[in-house]
Structure formats: structure tokens, C-alpha cells
Length: 515
Ligand code: HXC
Image (cartoon, rainbow, N blue to C red; front, side):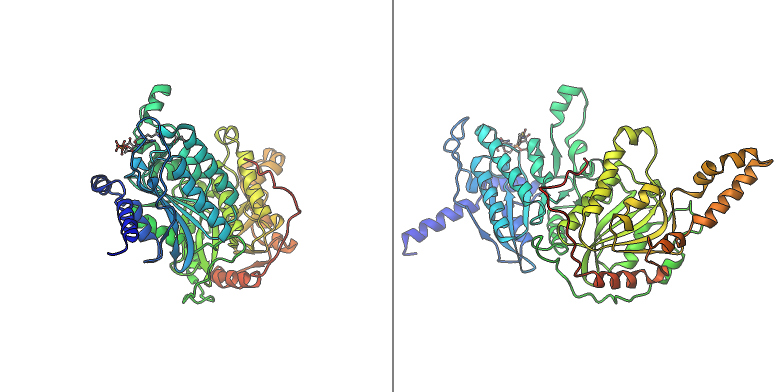
């Protein structure tokens, strides 16, 4: 090579690309993890990555950091493409100072956040870090604060997806928590505010890091994570899949794909799916999978609050958000966690122009002191708020029970549903026949010669009067009672009719959602 400047550039880049050096890279691989650069290469369309800030260096002086080489300051940042669409990405490099976040590491992430916002493109964070770089003290903390602020400003503007691919401890968990979706890798990802040693010291509890903040715990128990992947490759594949449902930003429509699933496909099996006995459960996933475009269903938070189901799907090639009660778990009641899950997903879909498809079969809110003391009132209110606030097309199908407040909450006409369909098995009432008969006919039942026979007669009377969709349909709260086999074609037709729907809310700074 003749040009010495070019030679120097190449040497510098080669040194940067070594990351923490062969030994630490080997250790990363031994731990079942890819390096930051391997992850980015797999995530993006081949050859599209453009790195920004590779030459950035830390300015830390204290605690032995002075003079320490930290290639790219432990985070690889830039932009590239996924299915041809521009995305911005940062990947923390655990082989360099444990991926810890110092002043300049943070500045690189902030720069990517700013560019993503300016260009209206999604941002993807691949996190693998020991948290705040201890040697850089308050500069590290400040770096996090600047990132949190940008996460918040970007919320609802561009999709923000975080993949946790290693440790994420302390306040470092809050940038992921401020993004739209968190994907965790089983076995290697851990998130917690205070680790096992601090917990042991303060509360005396003994817990392993994995049990405390591993992917299973954050998925099923805490509801912090949304999707689980078995390894790095699966997690990155999942990011690409999730992006396929989301637009580049809130001003654009989600990507439409050509679907070879006929929009007018009839599903005869749905006619007999709902048991005639209203107490008998069935699996609402069967309905969802039968109705949406074949192969398009991606369930979000499948193990958290499984009494409700949320996920992405497509109808006629158009991305939609699907929300449903799950009669197989807690009879499909709404509880605190289920309410949080529904409300958050409604707001994600509404922010990014995904129509809402709501499938209703719920006997109401879960009773009990645990729910009341836990604040089911304020948590349940989030669902009302989220649905009423949403301006995207809202299509509701009442499959069976739709009782009381839960009927209203599950995207009823009064909360602004644009199209409400009901199966003939729908029962729309203030409460179930047994409860209602016991309250309104209490005296008659009590005074009857045979109270049990009287109760059964009153339950039957109530059932005949109210336990069907036709009273609601007569008032216009239900737009059509349909053959269940036609659910897909009726939803696709409704969706196409509502595609250009525009609705505005009164101007204000922002609402005050119950929390
Ligand atoms: C500086 C760090 C670091 C950190 C790890 N390293 N975390 N350097 N600041 N926070 C360095 C280690 O010194 C080590 O350097 C290398 O990274 C790899 O770390 P190991 O400990 O060898 O790896 P491992 O055994 O896999 O353990 C990973 C770990 C552990 C569980 C993450 O390193 C750890 O507990 N780190 C501290 C976590 C923490 O408490 N962070 C602060 C959280 S508070 P060498 O040179 O030896 O290879 C926080 C506040 C944010 O983040 C507030 C925001 C509002």
C-alpha cells in the first residue's frame, strides 16, 4: 500500500474491529453469545451496515481507566437496512469493559437516537452490558439520563425495540423499559434493578440471578419482557419479524405484504368451537389462528397474564393488533396484569397505525381482595382509557360472554368501536344469568315453595331475555350478528372499509392515563 494515511486508517480500523481482543471474544462465544459486530451483521440485510463513531474513545481518567484501550468505547453504532428499510442500531460490546456505559459510549447511543428520530426510522438496541461504567461515575449516570430522555421523546414517534442479550442491571434496565418491545434471550439475558447480593444483604432473600431476572422471570412473572428467544440468532430473527408489522414512524402505514390466504376464506370449524355450556372453556388462540392470514400470528407476552391474549397478525396482508380474552385461563376474566397487558398493546398499535381487532369472551373482572387492594380500579381504567383514546380502526367480535364493565372495556361501541360483530353465542348483559337472577328475583326465590326450582326458572327466564346478542343488536350496540364461519371475511371487509378512517381528539398537552 502506497498511501501511508490509508494504511494508518486500515490499521486503526483493524484494531477497532478486534474489539476486546481474541481472548475476550472467545469468552463471549463460550458463554453462548455473539459479539456486537456479529449480531449487527446477522440482524441487518447483508452488507448494509454503515458504522458511525468507530473512532470514539472514552475520556475517563480515574480508577485506572486512563490509557485503557476501549475500541469503539464498547458500543457499535450505525445504520443499515432490514428488508430494504432503513433502521438505526446500537450494539453494546461486552468484550470491551463489559459493555459498560460511560460518557462517550452513551453519547454514541444518543447520536443514533437523534438520527433515528430525525429520519423517522426505527431504532434497535442490542444490550449486553455491566451497566454504568463505575470508573466514570456521574458522567455515566448523566449518559443514561440523556438516553432515557430520548427514549421518551421517541415514544410513539418511531418504533424502539430492545434485545437483552446479556446482563442489564440497575437503572440500565430503564432504557429498555421505555422502549416499545423487549426481546430477551433465554439463559444469557438478565434484567434486575438490584442484584442477588444486594437483595441478600437488605432483605435476607436468597435468589439466583437467573431466577431473579432471567428471561422466564421477566416474561411470565414481571411482564417486563414481551418476547423470548432461545439464542442470539433467534432473537435477531425475531426483531426482523416484529419490524414487519410496524411502520417506520407514526406518520406512515405499516407495511402491507401480498397474502395468498384468500380474504373471503370461510372457516366452518368456528361454528362448533364455542361450547353451548357457557361455563365450558375453549382456546381463543384457535379462533385467532383460524381468522388471521395463515402464518401471520405472533403472540406477544404469551406467558404473562395468559387470561388475555395480545399479538400481531395480518388480515388480507395488512398488519393488525389482536386482543382477546382467553376462556381457558381464569375464565377469561380481566385482572390487574391482564389490564396492563391489554392497555399497553392497544397504545402500541394505536401509536403505529395498526387497527385493533378485539375478540370478547369475558365474564367480568376477577373478584377478590388481592385484586381490589392491588388496584384493579386504576389498572382496569387503563384499558378503558387506551381503547377510548385510540383513533385507529377498531373492530370487535363478541364470541360469547360480554358482561358488565368488562363488556365495556373490551372495545365496546360506547368506547368507540367502529364495527361490532357478534356470534350467535354472544351473551351481552350486565352480569351472567345466575348472578342476575339471584339479585333481582331474590324475594320471589326466597318466598317460593321450592326455592331451587324457582331459582332455576328465573335463571332460565333471564337467559332467554338477555343471554343473547339480539337486545344489544336491537339498540345498535352490535352492528351485525354473524355466522362464526364468516368471521374472517367480515373482518377483512370491515378493515378495508375503515382503512382511511380519520378521527381526532381534542387538542391538549397530553392525557393523564391512570397508572
Ligand atoms: C466497569 C465493568 C462493569 C461496570 C463489568 N465490567 N461491569 N467495568 N463498570 N459496571 C468489566 C469487569 O471489570 C471486567 O473487566 C469485564 O467488564 C467483564 O466483567 P466480568 O465481571 O468479568 O464478567 P462476568 O463474570 O460475566 O459478570 C458480568 C456482570 C458483572 C454480572 C455484569 O461484571 C457485574 O456484576 N458488573 C457490575 C454490575 C453493576 O453493578 N453495574 C452497575 C449497575 S448500577 P476485566 O478487565 O476484568 O475483563 C447502574 C446504574 C445506572 O448501572 C443508573 C442509570 C440511572
